Image 1 (cartoon, rainbow, N blue to C red):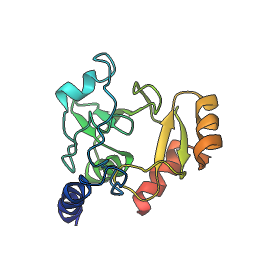
Image 2: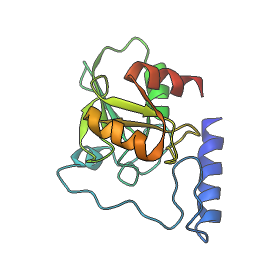
Image 3: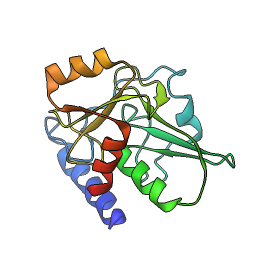
Image 4: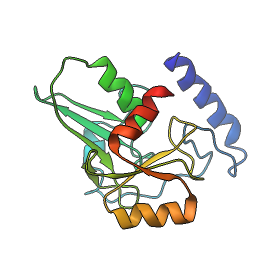
Length: 165
């Protein structure tokens, strides 16, 4: 089913590229490219350019990207919480050292459990119909909700929501 979703997303991205104001639910933005990210911000992207599960470009979707590091030294990069939920499900039994997520505003990786999460709102999510964004600061999450809607959540709540989709 996941491969079908990726193919479908690619087809929609091609179709929508002639209409930049539209976007598919996977976060594709037609011809609109993501803002350039400073080299220091996306160092993790160099080693993990594409999402391990769906193949999407992690630099393009830098605001939602995640990185899991296992105790054995294995590192897996994903484009979104949706794909991270798949990774965590597939890797049951492996000991996790850390799970990091990009801060929505800066693109810097932060501990997923310490992040202030927002579920919902009017900003299209990545690989989901219900967006889930992480923020390093509570004030930034609150400002985002005031402007774009959504509700505050913990990492556990955001992960559960992604698992249920």
